[in-house]
Length: 283
Image 1: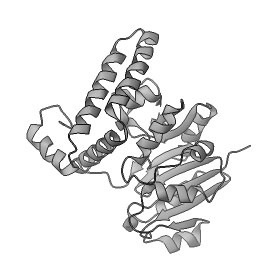
Image 2: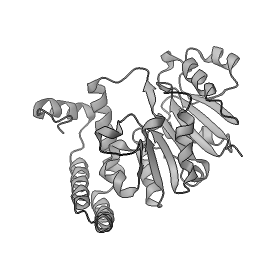
Image 3: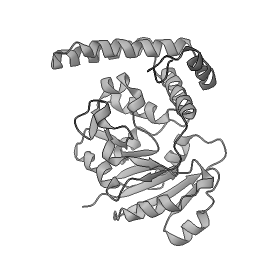
Image 4: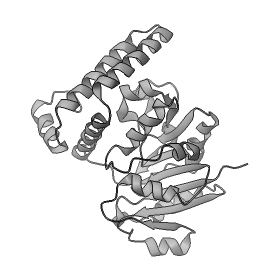
């Protein structure tokens, strides 16, 4: 039996509209697909899209968090999976959904995110990588993303998104799920194209805001304890002490962020002052 889907489109940039994205979604030809458009400001082409496609809409009040919109939209459906996308991205091809959903054959997989990183650049042999808690804490910048994310309905039923967060809601959700023993898959084959890629400055500010938010819901001392126990276990299994070094490095980053609560703008200024050749972010 083909699993049913609810696709939640987050309208992050209303002026760009949603027609190209909705058209690409229906090109996937997945039966049992329900599409809902969640917005605070309606996209400019909403009326045309409603006339051409069987979509529904959910208008949220100004200032609503990303988690609030997703949770309210998810309550409208009882589909097997939720797929969350942004109108700032487009699927790479007509196999995009297949690449996301194929990983749910493994019952340990709670979510799949299509990522834009190239696996050959980070020493990953396959086009995808499965993150457990230790791997996620060592590299949260490679965690799941609300702009291209598929999750199990039964997992969302137990772990809805935190509606208090405006930043890092996807990483915080992943952290809670991974603590329960599940895994998150990042698949390069399921990536999407950016309609309007961020500038280097915008990318850095988003990166810093994510790290700052990440440090606020993870207590460094508690994370160090859990990280160390996971790293010791993994180092023994792999016979590789490098896992201990990864845990120590991550704990150091979390501890620094917990003391230096800089805004993205302040961090950008520090980066300009202390940048070094070959150091992408500097701080």
